[in-house]
Image (spheres, rainbow, N blue to C red):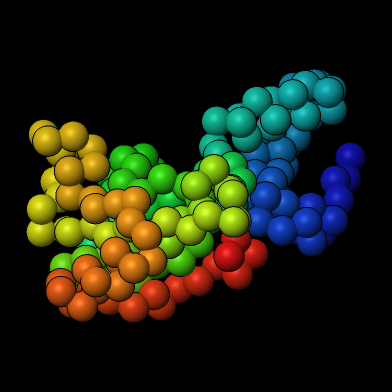
Length: 171
């Protein structure tokens, strides 16, 4: 039984994830169940069940240190997080983040709250004040939301970096 892996791959990142899962899970299951007289239905059910456990992020980009730009299911979930290194992370700047910049001390982000493109909020994260598991609350090292004018003032005062990564489809 064949499966249109190329069609899935053309559909984007999710398709690529499914294509990888399909090739890595279905084919070995097929040979295992065929040796034991199993049916294609069992193979498909096992492959789909196991693929649900593997997961694929729509976007996962390392920024600096342990910080990542991540969206799990859709790009509308794009946020800045602290990577725990085991596939998990702790959110720092909530969706929908569409632009980021960083230097040795700060990460800056532009966000459309709840995906509302008519509103732009600005944030900065002071990495020197952040901890893996913050005791002062998850957002103690994060300043924001700020207006454009407030952000411009903080950028001059603190030497905040410029935005170097813009995700055009979310802008």
